[in-house]
Image (cartoon, rainbow, N blue to C red; front, side, top):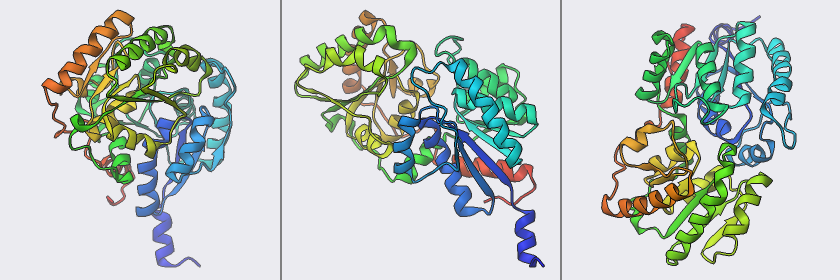
Length: 375
């Protein structure tokens, strides 16, 4: 016989599944997973596609999180279409077995798209974390921008990190009642990591570099040349570059940057180590979306090595600036940016990406839908 308490727990217990495959997804899902495990009695299952298994392993260890099921789908030189083709039947088989009350996906990867497609076919409610980010340029980045649009159309819960991302969804015809502005869970992740904010970025003598985007490959050699020139002009600064493991990226970057005395090319770092590197920096040169959010949260400016960005909030507040990818444009903008960060003394009082309570808001939306108490 079940006790009254046991019956109440069964009635108030949801069967929730998270699907992910890349480093940023792990980082941004972890705060929700952690809150669910410590503050609810729900059954929570983690599924990993293994899309970027080489990077994911370090994050699993650093963040103390382990998938319950790992499909290990990663192959060398994998193409996104073939990965999607292999992921869908694996995800379908597992979800048919688990029969979740809700599937959570995050971001804009092929892993995320595979989950959205299967959830739609199986009529499983889909919760989309970080919905509404847009560059408004269909093929930049590709296929990420396409994925974002498709997934938000399929989602039952669109968890938008900012008011701007909510507005993007409204303009695309996504139903207003499916959209919830929560803040970005990356701010929760930084808060949970207990990495304090940089109080004065101008006191730092380090420049952090991260470049990894496949769609920027044809521009990387030119960008590397300009970074090398800039570093030589500023011998008082130390440049730290955790180089992506992709051999194509390494071939384009390392021959140009390795000979420069004040540029240290190092192996990729785990999430906690990267946060500390950002915090110690005068500024960051990056083509990463997540680093734009993390640097804003930690009080450090970002030179965005891209032509556009889906994180426009940082641009508007002067926390970041687009460098462009064309070599001449990148060079001119990098020098303008360097001058600007000293002249303007950028304020990081306001964090446009959240307040560290996104996970709680997301869980409460799901609880409200199922008639459960808020946490």
